[in-house]
Image (cartoon, rainbow, N blue to C red; front, side, top):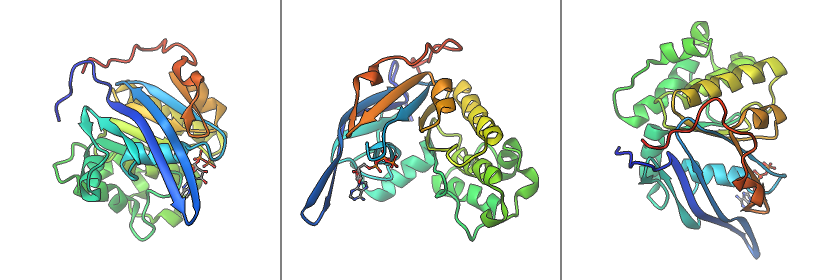
Length: 243
Ligand SMILES: Nc1ncnc2c1ncn2[C@@H]1O[C@H](COP(=O)(O)OP(=O)(O)OP(=O)(O)O)[C@@H](O)[C@H]1O
């Protein structure tokens, strides 16, 4: 994939998402635009129902926005057939969901191999190596239900990182974790950002917000003015979006 100079790794423009259930219409996203650069970590916050999960699903190509578009490394991922979105996602985006990115009947190792096969290309890091990196080298053959909460979080991260993605999207990755495991998962996400990944995290955690370079606040489907403000300066590094 060609990276255009000065293009952010992840870019969303004017995203809208309508849901219709019978007579009821919900406008979950009302024109959300955002950009995340290489090496940048962005936290997305907002009250329940403000559209955070809908936004993440649209960014990941798991859902189609009703309007607007999503680009990863300059390539449009939205408004494509589902199979194409799945292929692009497998190659370029890691998705870390609280519970949903591990298949219960597959071993941890096979869960990591699944997206590697879906990407249809030779992967750089083997499933075993990835599991070792997240501290699960000796749990490769375990089923998800045999893992502790902290181990599950690590396994989910290994799945999200299976294809060395340019973009890492996480939905409350530390939601149910104890303080220590939260710090470990957060450190792993920061490490990926330091390696050049664009990281976006939907979160309620003050710890995650503190560690982010920027915060986007959603309210009623809109990114509020706070989205344009920098929560704290990205003092450790200036995001490199020059490709
Ligand atoms: N499949 C759906 N069908 C109809 N309405 C939906 C659907 N999914 C979400 N919504 C509605 O869209 C709005 C945004 O929901 P979303 O789940 O994105 O919010 P959220 O900020 O992630 O909330 P939470 O923090 O509680 O997870 C809500 O009003 C929700 O009820």
